[in-house]
Length: 316
Image 1 (tube, rainbow, N blue to C red):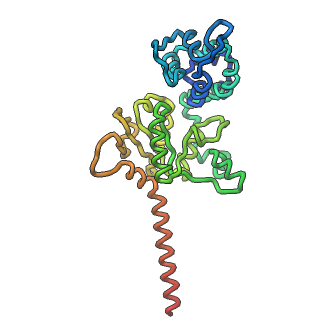
Image 2 (image 1 turned 90 degrees about the vertical axis):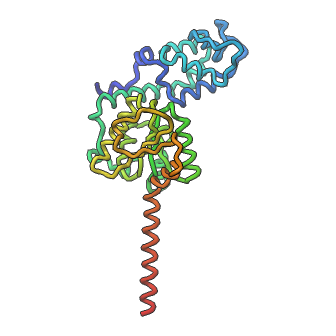
Image 3 (image 1 turned 90 degrees about the horizontal axis):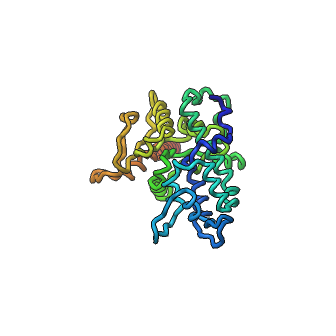
């Protein structure tokens, strides 16, 4: 299997199901298809989610007008309908505007899926920092890097990289709100922060996790996360980095799940258990910001000693 396998072919559309669609694609489809259209298609089908229900053999109960019908359709048929079949259904309800609007998103989803499959099947292609031909310090990995490069600023450092499964986005949003908004910490997220257009997305993740640009790796451990070969691939690689190094992984558990053997040596933070001894959010904040606090404390001590030295010299 070579890198040419990552090129998009017609077979990808006929072989892959719409389960490969990522959140931005699904949100765009929902935005364009959830609103009811008055005029029908040339086949007398509703030009919205109702037409898709008919063509995909999915029936929403009578009297039920769901907030996100496209989301419900995806839950029902995402593993049953191929991408080609889904696009054909859009053609039959005369929604060529939707096809055109989501074309690049869908192509990106296909490449992303094939990239993940390739990296899982060929873990030997993971490149270690010492093997990079490019100067890592000058490699643009995130959108923040791109901005910094354009304005002559140093590349930013992140307090932690947040790794989670797409199905746990609600938990990720809770962590983001708590750490970034309330605690003013800086996180790096794959979907939000990594620079698009990179051949192997996991390489950017690996570079950040492996370097001092990301102090910690926070993993939202769940059954969804552990059922994904891609997530386990990244987790196992990050775990291998900890051998002979200071631990950088913080597993966080928000709901009951089977804890992975790969992380059995790491101290978990449980958010699903009532504990009067400690506040898990405060423990996570202190852990992530400890390096920053130590630096501040060190600077304070050094400045204090310097001031004492100056006073001593004046007295002499």
